[in-house]
Structure formats: structure tokens, C-alpha cells
Length: 132
Image (cartoon, rainbow, N blue to C red):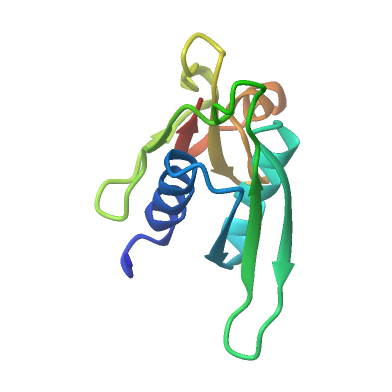
């Protein structure tokens, strides 16, 4: 378990669960992880998610989405900005992921959003990850 980069741990848990064809995965919750999960559901990369409250720490249970051929909807996840090397972009230089077949998830001054939403609102920020 990664203690220095919880977002990389989050992405790795989802990646491993999709490769193992699991239907759901539990991830320790934080506000940032909840927002990333909300975006994944909004963009139809996952079926659903629920937050399970516990005495120690709450968990996010993510229900993964698969196609008719039992292939995961999520083909890949890539961490971009890391704790040791933050990657910031301006509103003009927000990258396209796989020629707009994927999304970038960003933190901006207006909250966590996709790269397309940030471009539409005219704000830049830190690129957390790519999902395709």
C-alpha cells in the first residue's frame, strides 16, 4: 500500500481489479478520491459507487463496468502528476487523451473536473491522471 501517493494507490487498485475481472473494489476514502470516483461515474467508466462509513475509516466501493464481451470499459489508467513532480497546465495547453477517446482528471481552483470541463470553463490546474 502506498502511503506517499494515495491517488496512485487508488488507480492501481482499480487497474488490478479490472484485470482480475472483479465486479467491485473497495478503496479507502478521501474527499479527492470521492471526487475522482464521481467523475468516473459521470463519464460512464464505472457502474456505480457507494461510500461505506466505518468507525476507523470509510471506504468507497466501486462497481466496475464491463461490456458485452466481458472486457472492462476502462482500458487504462495513468498517473500524471506525482508528489515528487507536479504537472500543471494552463487553460490553452490542456492535453487531449487518445484523441478525445479518454479523459484527463484535473484539480483546479474550481474543484476536480475533467480536462474538457476545465477547457470549457477556461481554467487550468494540476493534471492528476488519464483514463481511457
